[in-house]
Image 1 (cartoon, protein in one colour):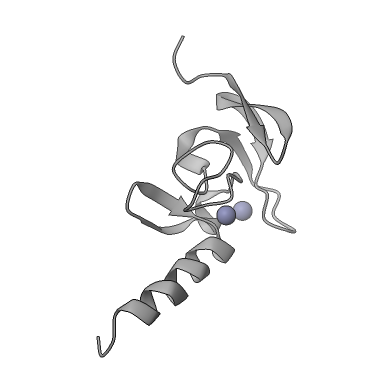
Image 2 (cartoon, rainbow, N blue to C red; image 1 turned 90 degrees about the vertical axis):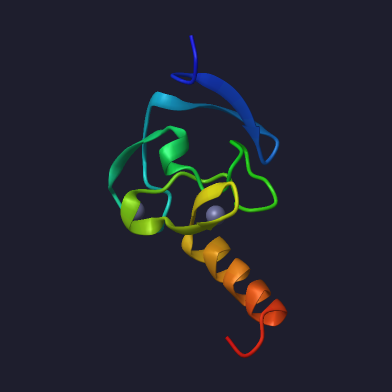
Length: 91
Ligand SMILES: [Zn+2]
Ligand SMILES: [Zn+2]
């Protein structure tokens, strides 16, 4: 029981997720062996949410997160950076 293995819907497609599910980092060209646990998730919710795309990445390809999303991929962390730059001026 728990978060070892569960089914999620991502982009209309059902996939298995959880820390017992082995996969490869989804960054282009990266072959790092990871699992689909929350530690590797982009965003806070499996399947994607307002923070991240729901992809799974190795530690090299997850960056500082926003709020409840502890890790974000390159694209999403950049997006949040740009949005927060617009809100915070003169920092
Ligand atoms: Zn992402
Ligand atoms: Zn990677």
